Amino acid sequence: MIGYVMVGTNNLDQSIKFYDELLDILNLERTEKDDVCAGYSQKGGDGKVEFYVTKPVNKEKATIGNGSQISFITNSRSIVDKFHETALKLGGTSEGSGGERPEGSGVYYSYIRDLDGNKICTFTNN
Image (cartoon, rainbow, N blue to C red; front, side, top):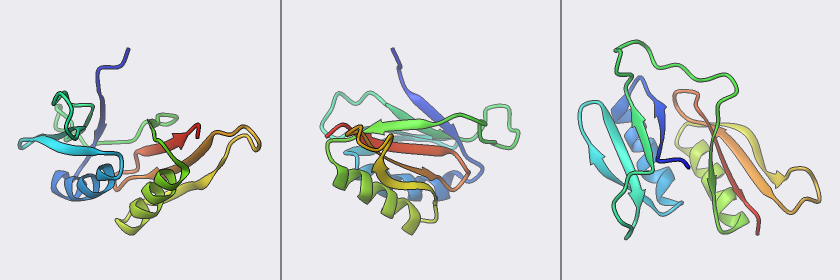
């Protein structure tokens, strides 16, 4: 069972602006912030943080994990597409726009890289 997910950043303020808007699409809102990190929880939920963006505790440069990916499940293809489009508008880069993978599977994915290069996926089975 996963308690929460965390990605690193080298510019917390810039990442907060990126994720505040992007995660709103997934019904997540920022519920915590300090000098080191920001935490996001489900709107109207129990307040438990599910996603953090953070400066590394060891004060070294944040780097991406080769092969690492964070994936969010959504309710619809339109949410997957909106997440992808919004990420690009906010300065993220595309790693693959919306589409079934594998074709004919019924599972619809899109992939982006955030401002620090972290790979983020959204997908739906609907």
